[in-house]
Length: 138
Image (cartoon, rainbow, N blue to C red; front, side, top):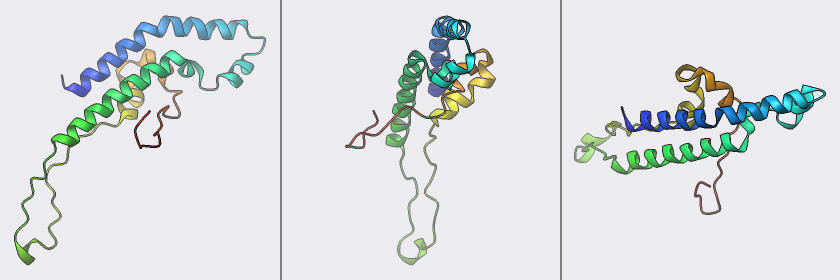
């Protein structure tokens, strides 16, 4: 199992651990509402909007970000340009680092690898991550 597969597997485990609580919360709100459409007005993305789901997503988003940073740091341009004019037009920069897109690993792939959890993440329609003034992810 690769490191990124391990991150995704632990993410699925974390979602499974909170799934019963999130489902009880959502089902309870829907049952208590006179009009379920009113619940959807407050929580338009459904169970995915629960703070615990978003916190888990953020934790694993940053783990993948760290993975990507290590991949980039270990990248070495293995291209040795020929001297002088012989190097003109050479565009091969060597093997690029393999980076992981967080949305693919934490939302899109879940439908296939853990379909019972997909409704917990499909509503994450924005990535709850931002850059601070120093261009650091927060």
